Length: 69
Image (cartoon, rainbow, N blue to C red; front, side, top):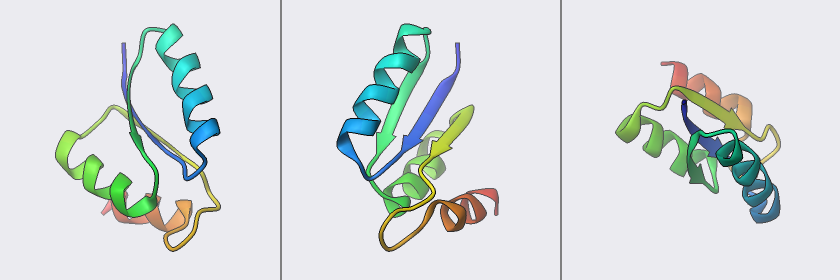
């Protein structure tokens, strides 16, 4: 299935979302901030990115903009 990068600063949300995606057969990588998500995206080039919008320091929209560059 898909290789998914999950970016969220909330540990519980990440764990729950990861569990649901893995049940569906997806490979899930995690990042706990926009900065680490951008770095992981550059290193792994996943098929899909799921990100929280409201995060400290680098919000989800800014993370998406940087990934799209």
